[in-house]
Image (cartoon, rainbow, N blue to C red; front, side, top):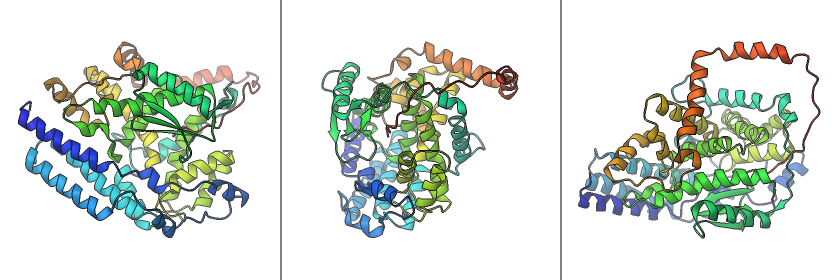
Length: 445
């Protein structure tokens, strides 16, 4: 596997993939113009936004679909021919190429019934079962929505106000990125063309000029966008041969978004309202997949006490690129809950199986869980470089081991429902506390 000629072929093929995928930007190709939310809410959510197939066709792609599709086909053939059909790294490379071929078809069919078909191929469906379990993602989303909507949530509303401007947030985040990655490694800048309050791509964090943030929001941004999304990009760029690990096709979305949510949790940066928004996304995808239109999904969340702003945002995220009458929608947003559950189960299983050393490979680049055993083997052989940038709890695994060890041990030997019933009796006569804090509405992608 360390044959110099093989490694050079691997690098050349990988670098071709990195170059080919550069103009393919899914979210840019399906974003909605500013002002849609205001008009929709002025109409009290009764009329579908005027965004149909013709709207998307007027938004030119940054690439020519037929020609780039042919280039991917040629690259896939070259991978098979130069690395061999049975080469393990070559198979990962081929799977990534195939994903981009589907992405091209996804974007070619924006605003049509076929868009949802290709979205499910890339990201899955809310009706899919969780890996290794019979429960569906929709069932998990509903359960989490219930937990994060309990009366106790109102008692925990944060003592943080959204008083930090976008400009000041950029300064704070730039300083934190310099501390984590080194001076100048990551750019943080103002943006006028993103839907969410902030997002990350490559080695850059974009902050929405119109947004205001709390201190806790910035903590979420630091670990979610910085430590995870940018960290895995930069670790992928450190690869001497497998350079494609620096770019993310949809096949890696679940592990990326799930790890970002997990890091929010492990660093105590998240909060119940944000966790509720992430859980709501699964429910929104399922409703839309089952045929609910934009207005119906929006109304569903309004009737459950979600604010107009958050109800619009969760609905808009699902319908962008698809048909506003439902059925054909963007299913990416199941990735947050799906990835969180699968990452947690992967870490627990690695610990219980006696191979905790594989856990840091989660950050080696843009990967899937199925890739990791092979990538770890190639790491031991010197073909793959270990992750340079690692969150503190993944550098020293002792605390993580204990955390997940206790969690795994308790869940396997205790009847949690019976324990909860026992303590609930102690709480029955407690007076209800007052609402302690205010709220925040910032949304991080």
